[in-house]
Image (cartoon, rainbow over the protein chains, first blue to last red):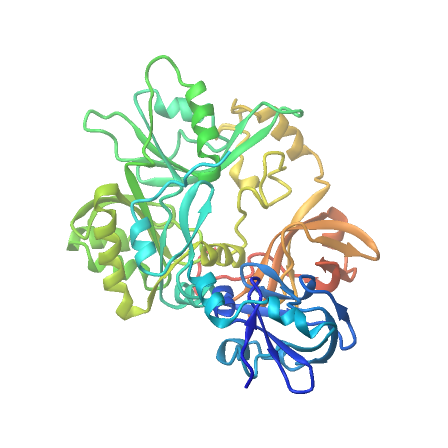
Length: 124
Length: 387
């Protein structure tokens, strides 16, 4: 399995064979949110730019935006996830994936944090 | 302006027990330790333990203390019995219409001093403490009333839930335990809790039975830890401000800054009972803002406070517009998932005719219309609750 990359806004990206990129939310972010009640994901076909809102996630306390870590087109959405938000906490890097994006520029992933750099970010 | 938040005597405990700390009204407070939903449900089913030391605690004593408070507060003070607490508004006659609501508060008549001098305690919101203190000080008579802000030298611990009173009583001698368990709602007594002198009142802000315990700052952590240790086997959870907010929302209790603001009409938001325009003989009680409140009581309010329920867990938040028939008819003042109900609820101020109508209501939740229905307040009433 390819190595995960992370955005500073706590989304992760995994390059898949075939050039797609799977996107999710880091375990740290899910644990920080707690008490998840609602999630809105984009429709398939939506074009997103890195750093722009991809959807939203709501906890009892607050609503947070989910940001696109890379630019591209949403080609697949984990439609079951909003109805089983526990999956996010149980398996944030597997069954808790959010969307698959066809990146405009695969080189964009190189600008994201690797696991060690992300771990350092959330520990600081 | 950026200032370091104040620390309650329990801040170190919160930090070392996983409290997620934030600056709330200038205080360094825990929003939650584990999960807001878990903390909420622990309070409903067993015991929630809350540090509410950020609330302002004021002491008003002296031979003229009673008459002075009577002349300032919207509720009658002269007939508060020793050991009785009363909910009141603190108003001034400043502002465009001759009324500014400075805060809502709980005023308690404590045991008289040994020489018979009356003593009162007042609890005010953290966010309003500075201006309430300034307002009261500005009205102090030259003699006869002493006024002190005791917030920093004391701590206030709320123990709430069906098993709360029994748990506190375990930490008291037989006489004190008997008095505490026998307290009616809005009654208070002195007692030794975990060996420490305390003011104990049958009050709270959760919709549950329970007490609030005021102790000296120096012993606050000992008392808190003792209650915590006695309560954990019974299902106690330490709770942060997040659960405090969802609990009071379910209980339909207004929060200053949300349902209640400086310009509010108390009669429109269900706080008419907090305003005594007359004394028991029917004569007008003079207090600041009284004339404006008399006008409001005589008029029909434009908007009234209502409860809204949603089918989903997605919450409307403060400021979300309430829409009926394509027209904005109100604004949400507080909204959240109601953990005891399993769906989202909100309190809102809506046009008076809406509350009586059956029009299909929607709330714009981040621009997405979401169907809502009127639901009588409170959303949650504890089993066996009086009244």
